[in-house]
Image (cartoon, rainbow, N blue to C red):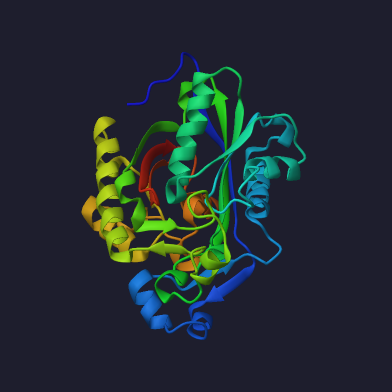
Length: 335
């Protein structure tokens, strides 16, 4: 079970999300690749996804989600002490997307940095933020943002992957509180298996294989995924980490009000739901509307259910993520 620095706990002060205006439906995808609405829905549960405008970068999505989270928290941007951005589609190789977000928010001097764990971004970010808040007396409000413009790395000729992904961002304001009753972070569990990194990756554009005419010609700047292997690992690992974090906190799934899994594929979520024994009304699902938005998917789902009035103050949340790396994480939260 999570331990806290004396007198310092972490509460979720606010949450927000943003998805682009443009909706890309399955029927539109039928005109782009050899697929059909029935095929996509049967295999993924996705009906539509959001696609960012050409002039929108990941930082733009993050800024809009951050503004909504700060509004939800009822705090000024000047109250933010540190910015974390989880993304695999940074605006550029460097500087970090976090410093660009800082500038667009009109802030200066506060520390900010990116981290890259793909679809486990929500869980890793919560651990990073809560550890900084409880382990250091330098910070009181941390702005955690997860955002990706997945449409910028999707191969629109690959029907196996292009139907899955969408663009979006989610954000949380995590704050120090001396009141233990307000504590929101019950526990976080993280893990990774680097031996399986080749199941999901983007080959070119880094130091191993810099961009060249050949890498562009060979379409190496688009993500590649071994779908069946990722499906299997996602179900097994998210089930395992969910059961482990519940066990080490002496909790059962019945004590959880809502389960928020990574929104990768409805079939993955359904398989996970069956293995954990979770009732339909406890599962937060947004993959049908937004597709897989990578790091932000759990934050977008949580925010959606907060805005709908389903998740309320005091609700206990179990959230699990799984992404490239392979990375994974689980978090038990109390709103």
